[in-house]
Length: 133
Length: 175
Image (cartoon, rainbow over all chains, first blue to last red; front, side, top):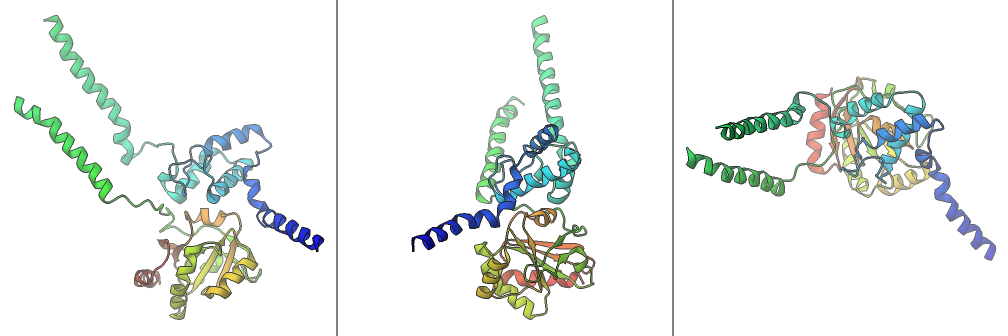
Protein backbone atom coordinates (compact mmCIF):
# COMPACT_ATOMS: atom_id res chain seq x y z
CA UNK A 1 0.00 0.00 0.00
CA UNK A 2 2.69 2.39 1.09
CA UNK A 3 4.76 1.30 -1.85
CA UNK A 4 1.99 1.94 -4.43
CA UNK A 5 1.38 5.34 -2.90
CA UNK A 6 5.07 6.14 -3.19
CA UNK A 7 5.12 4.90 -6.78
CA UNK A 8 2.10 7.02 -7.64
CA UNK A 9 3.78 10.03 -6.06
CA UNK A 10 6.97 9.36 -7.99
CA UNK A 11 5.01 9.03 -11.24
CA UNK A 12 3.22 12.28 -10.49
CA UNK A 13 6.46 14.06 -9.77
CA UNK A 14 8.19 12.72 -12.87
CA UNK A 15 5.36 12.99 -15.38
CA UNK A 16 5.60 16.69 -16.20
CA UNK A 17 9.38 16.51 -16.26
CA UNK A 18 9.35 13.79 -18.89
CA UNK A 19 6.69 15.15 -21.23
CA UNK A 20 7.94 18.71 -21.31
CA UNK A 21 11.64 18.19 -20.77
CA UNK A 22 12.28 19.63 -24.24
CA UNK A 23 11.18 23.13 -23.22
CA UNK A 24 13.87 23.15 -20.50
CA UNK A 25 16.60 23.35 -23.13
CA UNK A 26 15.46 26.78 -24.25
CA UNK A 27 17.43 28.41 -21.46
CA UNK A 28 20.62 26.39 -21.60
CA UNK A 29 23.49 28.69 -22.56
CA UNK A 30 25.30 28.04 -25.82
CA UNK A 31 28.73 26.41 -25.40
CA UNK A 32 30.37 29.26 -27.32
CA UNK A 33 30.33 32.30 -24.96
CA UNK A 34 30.57 34.77 -27.84
CA UNK A 35 27.52 33.29 -29.53
CA UNK A 36 25.67 33.18 -26.20
CA UNK A 37 26.39 36.90 -25.71
CA UNK A 38 25.04 37.66 -29.19
CA UNK A 39 21.92 35.56 -28.55
CA UNK A 40 21.34 37.26 -25.17
CA UNK A 41 21.72 40.73 -26.70
CA UNK A 42 19.21 39.85 -29.42
CA UNK A 43 16.71 38.42 -26.91
CA UNK A 44 16.74 41.69 -24.98
CA UNK A 45 15.61 43.57 -28.08
CA UNK A 46 12.90 41.17 -29.27
CA UNK A 47 9.44 41.93 -27.97
CA UNK A 48 7.38 39.14 -26.46
CA UNK A 49 4.19 38.66 -28.48
CA UNK A 50 2.33 37.39 -25.40
CA UNK A 51 3.42 39.76 -22.60
CA UNK A 52 3.65 42.80 -24.85
CA UNK A 53 6.05 45.42 -23.59
CA UNK A 54 8.43 42.83 -22.14
CA UNK A 55 11.38 41.51 -24.07
CA UNK A 56 11.51 37.76 -24.61
CA UNK A 57 14.53 37.74 -22.29
CA UNK A 58 12.29 38.89 -19.42
CA UNK A 59 9.07 37.06 -20.25
CA UNK A 60 7.94 33.81 -18.66
CA UNK A 61 5.52 32.99 -21.49
CA UNK A 62 5.99 29.59 -23.14
CA UNK A 63 6.12 31.20 -26.57
CA UNK A 64 8.88 33.58 -25.42
CA UNK A 65 10.85 30.59 -24.07
CA UNK A 66 10.48 28.83 -27.41
CA UNK A 67 11.65 31.99 -29.18
CA UNK A 68 14.73 32.09 -26.94
CA UNK A 69 15.33 28.46 -27.85
CA UNK A 70 14.96 29.22 -31.54
CA UNK A 71 17.36 32.19 -31.32
CA UNK A 72 19.98 30.07 -29.50
CA UNK A 73 19.54 27.27 -32.04
CA UNK A 74 20.02 29.56 -35.04
CA UNK A 75 22.90 31.58 -33.62
CA UNK A 76 24.50 28.31 -32.48
CA UNK A 77 24.39 27.20 -36.12
CA UNK A 78 26.34 30.32 -37.12
CA UNK A 79 23.54 32.64 -38.22
CA UNK A 80 24.06 36.32 -37.38
CA UNK A 81 21.84 38.01 -34.78
CA UNK A 82 20.67 40.64 -37.27
CA UNK A 83 19.63 37.97 -39.74
CA UNK A 84 17.50 36.28 -37.04
CA UNK A 85 16.00 39.69 -36.21
CA UNK A 86 15.18 40.26 -39.88
CA UNK A 87 13.52 36.84 -40.01
CA UNK A 88 11.38 37.63 -36.97
CA UNK A 89 10.38 41.02 -38.44
CA UNK A 90 9.45 39.25 -41.68
CA UNK A 91 7.10 36.96 -39.72
CA UNK A 92 5.69 39.26 -37.02
CA UNK A 93 6.23 42.73 -38.47
CA UNK A 94 8.37 45.69 -37.27
CA UNK A 95 6.49 45.57 -33.99
CA UNK A 96 8.46 42.55 -32.74
CA UNK A 97 11.79 44.38 -32.62
CA UNK A 98 12.65 46.96 -29.95
CA UNK A 99 15.43 48.30 -32.15
CA UNK A 100 13.94 51.07 -34.29
CA UNK A 101 14.86 51.25 -37.94
CA UNK A 102 14.89 54.33 -40.18
CA UNK A 103 12.30 54.14 -42.90
CA UNK A 104 9.49 56.23 -44.37
CA UNK A 105 6.97 55.74 -41.59
CA UNK A 106 9.48 56.22 -38.76
CA UNK A 107 11.39 59.13 -40.34
CA UNK A 108 9.53 61.86 -38.36
CA UNK A 109 10.62 60.17 -35.15
CA UNK A 110 14.27 60.39 -36.17
CA UNK A 111 14.02 63.89 -37.59
CA UNK A 112 12.11 65.43 -34.68
CA UNK A 113 15.21 66.02 -32.49
CA UNK A 114 16.88 67.78 -35.42
CA UNK A 115 13.85 70.06 -35.82
CA UNK A 116 13.80 70.74 -32.08
CA UNK A 117 17.47 71.69 -32.24
CA UNK A 118 16.88 74.03 -35.19
CA UNK A 119 13.95 75.72 -33.44
CA UNK A 120 16.07 76.04 -30.28
CA UNK A 121 18.92 77.57 -32.27
CA UNK A 122 16.47 80.01 -33.87
CA UNK A 123 15.13 81.09 -30.46
CA UNK A 124 18.64 81.45 -29.04
CA UNK A 125 19.63 83.65 -31.97
CA UNK A 126 16.86 86.07 -30.96
CA UNK A 127 18.18 86.16 -27.42
CA UNK A 128 21.76 86.93 -28.43
CA UNK A 129 20.60 89.71 -30.71
CA UNK A 130 18.75 91.46 -27.90
CA UNK A 131 21.80 91.31 -25.66
CA UNK A 132 24.02 92.83 -28.33
CA UNK A 133 21.54 95.61 -28.91
CA UNK B 1 -1.45 88.78 -33.45
CA UNK B 2 -0.54 88.66 -29.77
CA UNK B 3 -4.03 87.38 -28.93
CA UNK B 4 -3.51 84.54 -31.41
CA UNK B 5 -0.30 83.43 -29.69
CA UNK B 6 -2.04 83.51 -26.31
CA UNK B 7 -4.54 80.94 -27.58
CA UNK B 8 -1.95 78.56 -29.02
CA UNK B 9 -1.09 76.76 -25.74
CA UNK B 10 -4.77 76.31 -24.96
CA UNK B 11 -5.53 74.85 -28.38
CA UNK B 12 -2.52 72.53 -28.08
CA UNK B 13 -3.70 71.41 -24.63
CA UNK B 14 -7.18 70.59 -25.95
CA UNK B 15 -5.69 68.69 -28.90
CA UNK B 16 -3.45 66.58 -26.65
CA UNK B 17 -6.35 65.86 -24.26
CA UNK B 18 -8.47 64.80 -27.25
CA UNK B 19 -5.79 62.26 -28.24
CA UNK B 20 -5.70 60.89 -24.67
CA UNK B 21 -9.50 60.70 -24.51
CA UNK B 22 -9.62 58.81 -27.79
CA UNK B 23 -7.11 56.28 -26.46
CA UNK B 24 -9.20 55.80 -23.29
CA UNK B 25 -12.56 55.53 -25.03
CA UNK B 26 -11.48 53.15 -27.78
CA UNK B 27 -8.15 51.51 -26.95
CA UNK B 28 -6.20 50.24 -29.93
CA UNK B 29 -6.37 46.55 -30.74
CA UNK B 30 -3.48 44.85 -28.93
CA UNK B 31 -3.63 41.64 -30.97
CA UNK B 32 -0.37 40.89 -32.77
CA UNK B 33 -1.20 40.29 -36.42
CA UNK B 34 0.98 37.97 -38.44
CA UNK B 35 3.12 39.56 -41.13
CA UNK B 36 2.82 36.32 -43.12
CA UNK B 37 -0.61 37.06 -44.62
CA UNK B 38 -0.18 37.24 -48.40
CA UNK B 39 3.09 35.32 -48.29
CA UNK B 40 3.72 31.64 -49.03
CA UNK B 41 3.43 29.55 -45.87
CA UNK B 42 6.70 28.69 -44.09
CA UNK B 43 8.42 25.34 -44.51
CA UNK B 44 7.09 23.03 -41.82
CA UNK B 45 7.25 19.28 -41.27
CA UNK B 46 5.27 18.22 -38.21
CA UNK B 47 4.71 14.65 -37.07
CA UNK B 48 1.09 13.55 -37.17
CA UNK B 49 -0.50 13.58 -33.72
CA UNK B 50 -2.97 10.73 -34.23
CA UNK B 51 -1.03 8.82 -36.86
CA UNK B 52 2.71 9.58 -37.11
CA UNK B 53 2.58 8.85 -40.85
CA UNK B 54 0.00 11.61 -41.42
CA UNK B 55 2.50 14.42 -41.38
CA UNK B 56 1.54 18.07 -41.62
CA UNK B 57 4.04 19.55 -44.04
CA UNK B 58 4.16 22.44 -46.49
CA UNK B 59 3.57 20.05 -49.41
CA UNK B 60 0.29 18.88 -47.87
CA UNK B 61 -1.17 22.37 -48.39
CA UNK B 62 -0.20 22.58 -52.07
CA UNK B 63 -2.82 20.17 -53.45
CA UNK B 64 -4.99 22.92 -54.95
CA UNK B 65 -7.55 22.87 -52.15
CA UNK B 66 -7.92 25.88 -49.83
CA UNK B 67 -7.81 24.91 -46.17
CA UNK B 68 -8.16 26.29 -42.70
CA UNK B 69 -5.12 25.91 -40.53
CA UNK B 70 -6.19 26.00 -36.89
CA UNK B 71 -3.49 26.68 -34.28
CA UNK B 72 -4.81 25.18 -31.04
CA UNK B 73 -3.93 23.06 -28.01
CA UNK B 74 -5.69 20.56 -25.81
CA UNK B 75 -4.75 22.66 -22.74
CA UNK B 76 -6.28 25.80 -24.24
CA UNK B 77 -9.71 26.50 -22.68
CA UNK B 78 -11.03 28.94 -25.34
CA UNK B 79 -10.16 26.37 -28.02
CA UNK B 80 -12.96 24.14 -26.67
CA UNK B 81 -15.48 26.89 -27.46
CA UNK B 82 -14.68 26.97 -31.16
CA UNK B 83 -14.77 23.22 -31.79
CA UNK B 84 -18.57 23.14 -32.45
CA UNK B 85 -18.16 25.98 -34.96
CA UNK B 86 -15.29 24.14 -36.65
CA UNK B 87 -17.37 20.94 -36.73
CA UNK B 88 -20.16 22.83 -38.44
CA UNK B 89 -17.78 24.22 -41.06
CA UNK B 90 -16.30 20.77 -41.61
CA UNK B 91 -19.82 19.42 -42.19
CA UNK B 92 -20.13 22.07 -44.93
CA UNK B 93 -17.07 20.62 -46.63
CA UNK B 94 -14.33 22.86 -45.21
CA UNK B 95 -10.95 21.12 -44.79
CA UNK B 96 -9.44 21.91 -41.40
CA UNK B 97 -5.88 21.05 -40.46
CA UNK B 98 -4.77 21.42 -36.87
CA UNK B 99 -1.43 22.41 -35.40
CA UNK B 100 -1.29 21.46 -31.73
CA UNK B 101 1.10 23.55 -29.64
CA UNK B 102 3.02 21.97 -26.72
CA UNK B 103 0.77 18.95 -26.83
CA UNK B 104 0.88 15.18 -26.51
CA UNK B 105 -1.06 12.49 -28.38
CA UNK B 106 -2.90 11.14 -25.28
CA UNK B 107 -3.98 14.66 -24.24
CA UNK B 108 -5.22 15.37 -27.76
CA UNK B 109 -7.13 12.10 -27.91
CA UNK B 110 -8.89 13.05 -24.68
CA UNK B 111 -9.64 16.54 -26.03
CA UNK B 112 -11.03 15.20 -29.31
CA UNK B 113 -13.19 12.49 -27.75
CA UNK B 114 -14.65 15.04 -25.32
CA UNK B 115 -15.29 17.85 -27.82
CA UNK B 116 -15.33 16.23 -31.27
CA UNK B 117 -12.78 16.11 -34.05
CA UNK B 118 -13.17 18.61 -36.91
CA UNK B 119 -9.59 18.02 -38.16
CA UNK B 120 -8.52 16.08 -41.22
CA UNK B 121 -4.98 16.02 -39.86
CA UNK B 122 -3.21 17.31 -36.76
CA UNK B 123 0.49 18.09 -36.56
CA UNK B 124 2.41 18.19 -33.28
CA UNK B 125 4.34 21.43 -32.73
CA UNK B 126 6.19 20.57 -29.54
CA UNK B 127 8.46 23.61 -29.41
CA UNK B 128 6.26 26.22 -31.18
CA UNK B 129 8.65 26.48 -34.14
CA UNK B 130 5.80 26.16 -36.66
CA UNK B 131 3.67 28.63 -34.70
CA UNK B 132 6.52 31.17 -34.70
CA UNK B 133 7.10 30.61 -38.43
CA UNK B 134 3.45 31.43 -39.08
CA UNK B 135 3.79 34.66 -37.06
CA UNK B 136 1.11 33.42 -34.68
CA UNK B 137 1.05 34.91 -31.19
CA UNK B 138 -1.23 32.50 -29.35
CA UNK B 139 -4.01 29.93 -29.35
CA UNK B 140 -6.52 29.72 -30.90
CA UNK B 141 -5.66 31.31 -34.21
CA UNK B 142 -6.82 30.27 -37.66
CA UNK B 143 -5.24 30.87 -41.06
CA UNK B 144 -6.85 30.54 -44.47
CA UNK B 145 -4.30 28.88 -46.78
CA UNK B 146 -5.04 28.68 -50.50
CA UNK B 147 -4.37 25.69 -52.76
CA UNK B 148 -0.85 26.91 -53.57
CA UNK B 149 0.13 27.16 -49.93
CA UNK B 150 -0.18 30.97 -49.74
CA UNK B 151 -1.60 32.41 -46.48
CA UNK B 152 -4.66 34.50 -47.34
CA UNK B 153 -6.20 35.47 -44.03
CA UNK B 154 -5.59 35.31 -40.28
CA UNK B 155 -8.30 35.08 -37.66
CA UNK B 156 -7.06 35.84 -34.13
CA UNK B 157 -8.93 34.26 -31.23
CA UNK B 158 -11.97 32.01 -30.99
CA UNK B 159 -14.08 31.63 -34.13
CA UNK B 160 -17.64 32.49 -33.14
CA UNK B 161 -20.69 31.75 -35.34
CA UNK B 162 -20.56 35.42 -36.37
CA UNK B 163 -17.10 34.95 -37.89
CA UNK B 164 -18.12 31.99 -40.06
CA UNK B 165 -19.44 34.00 -43.07
CA UNK B 166 -16.20 36.03 -43.19
CA UNK B 167 -14.04 32.91 -43.06
CA UNK B 168 -16.16 31.09 -45.68
CA UNK B 169 -15.88 34.15 -47.95
CA UNK B 170 -12.09 34.19 -47.51
CA UNK B 171 -11.96 30.48 -48.34
CA UNK B 172 -14.03 31.07 -51.46
CA UNK B 173 -11.80 33.97 -52.49
CA UNK B 174 -8.78 31.68 -52.04
CA UNK B 175 -10.13 29.18 -54.57
